[in-house]
Length: 569
Image (cartoon, rainbow, N blue to C red):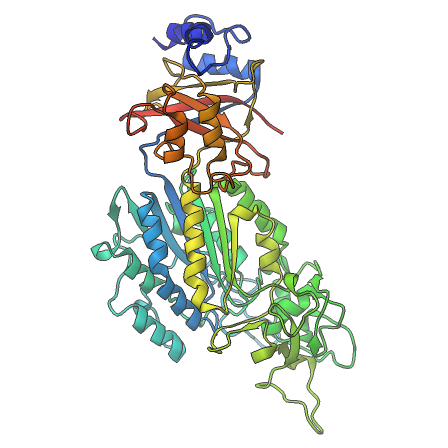
């Protein structure tokens, strides 16, 4: 059935469709498929003619998959921010829920440990960094325990209070799952209370390692190196990663962990800067930066850039990881963190994002007859911090450059940054992230830009196939939709159609395509807020499927298989 019908359909497509507003590429003359060819053989012939054939099954009835990872700093000072995150989460979850997607929500900490080897303290002295006494920390593993189930013996009063407020009743994911989920209307939250359960697991305490490593922790959560997170990240899902931290990333290279040794020396007189000039709390930043002024002295620092001295992992490692994990149209990154040094390179004291070095008054206060060593240096407190909330001093942030450098390597539509010092805006940024997610689940994108025939039509074979065999060759080829219809798909979400979404139920799409028969579009959409791009950031094309019969969805039990010859750079 497939063999002969496909050949006849290809051979007669241009004639049979010439009376309509739509056309199909003439593939028969340039790429003949012999009678009796199996679907596999036909696909191989097309591939030999046109190069790579992108196969993309589309089901407009199906619920889209969304995986959301919260990377939460669990070091001292974070309990007020964790509490605010839990308070602000309601509308975010409601928006994701209203999208109709199948979603997963997970929480990890920024603690990946600091030791050189398991159960091995630093020598001499058998020393450990308080809070960092392990080799792997939480290792990017999803945190499923309710805060009330955790060991709170070392938690601050604020951290305990945050747990009591957010989690009055213990709620945890059921069935031993390490993450929250809603799939086809069924949740694993007690009483289906996704929001309440998130509020219980988000307060993960404030006794984690002070060498916060959000980038490495996020990578470990998603790289399948451990089975603990199995099932969380699904193939082809939209992935959102939301970082919540008040310090810069300190993802130390494993081969450089000797430099985590808490032993330190006074470099005041030597004038030289080595990793151990500073205590650990300041070392990560100071050892990783080069500025116009020395980091072994107090005062504002200007013109700071990363030293790339091999202590911390290059941010390019994490840019590559996430870029290879998802194309930009399937990725949303958000940072609720400190305003960046990148935006205040001169450390203007009237602006946020500054770096002012001071002596830690819990260690040493200079005065008559008292000279403080470099071991007492740290980032300034209060108004000397990188940011400070005007009404609540619990909301402050310390200088960062790596996190913003990382996120700004991605497409503008894939990223959001928000100051951690503005708790009133946590809900706002989460709303933006939710909107970005719902936009991305509306777009089906090809892996490359389609090649075109002499008439300018995409070289594609598109048709309905059984949902159980989504890669099968269609019996009947759908034509390309009219120019008016395809233009509506291409511009949905662009400045000329901001509220439109590239889905067949959108009113703009319906108005433009109503005169067309069942058909498809394969069009670049570079100006859309869901612009289709490959993992290298190059424009690809949106796959749009129009089914004339109301409600314009893929028929039950069917999917549309898009097989297009795409250009690969």
